[in-house]
Length: 226
Image (cartoon, rainbow, N blue to C red; front, top):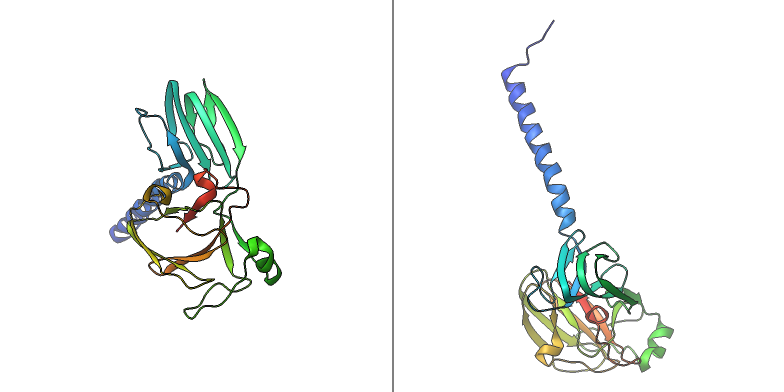
């Protein structure tokens, strides 16, 4: 015998169904929006992402016969230079059809390290001195930047204030867009071995400039992500 569902219960079931459908539809989009790689360079005239855009897994870039793109993967620290063909962005490296790819692993600046008291005294001559406004202490998390000019990535446009915390120095204030910006293009650079704190809203990231192996041209090796 069929049992009729009361009108108010049918309305509630319909509402729950709509909510579940919306959640299911939104989940893949949210995953797809997660950045997988940074476009470090790309040939002029290629449709799609521009230099210093993030791209997510599944993004396709058609390079044609001679176009090229350089991608830096955030999780694997792999830097790819791809020429020709069609590129499908993955999570750790790309799938390339009809083109050639050269891969190398670069120091990944986005991976922070913990400096012990002993390491802080040996790392590039670094000694943590606590300045009047408070600074990096032994054991603090410090992102190592392999170049004097960092690349700073903000989730949306805003102001970044960079203070030196191991010695006294004037702060640097920057108004940046909501995408990665290479500070070398703004002629902003920092002292080798220096320890700094970049503040954006209520967030802050401490970083150290390490150029013992020379300034890295790779944006991935100089990336500070908020």
